[in-house]
View 1 (cartoon, rainbow, N blue to C red):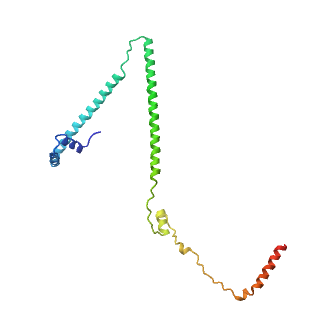
View 2 (cartoon, helix red, strand yellow):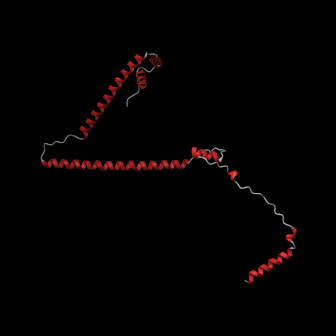
View 3 (cartoon, helix red, strand yellow):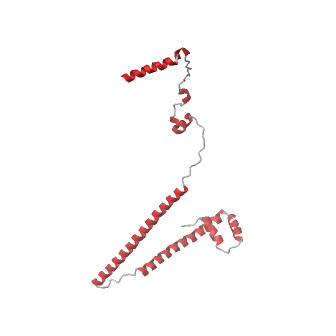
Length: 197
């Protein structure tokens, strides 16, 4: 990964002796002219590019050395029976590697599944935090305006749509009530009517 200009500058400054004068150097670098600063940046980028290329070359060399050590070149100047035996050995080696790869993949999948289960358990244990709701006083019109935006045309003045109900005071006249014994006799007569039918 290539380094940024400032980090390369900081690396070059701090790669020398570790002293309190590093900050003084850094301050002096800040006071440089822009052409000098650009020249130093280009030099640092060239150095970084050579480092990156050297790392790539080293990686290729280490890979080739490992392959030469782990997988030597076969001797193909043998008779057919020896070559068949070599092919069988190579196939057995491939089978072992495939088994190991399959085992490693299954372990990784099992570990991933366990990680997911543990994450779910952590969420369950922590619980879902409900945000503190604020009490908002809002009319029905304002709510519809917020929900529907410009589409809202109807006003929802619910109080205006309510029916006016007038309470009527029932005044029972004492004449209608009359004698209570008479009412009981009437009810008894009605009861007899239902029983006979």
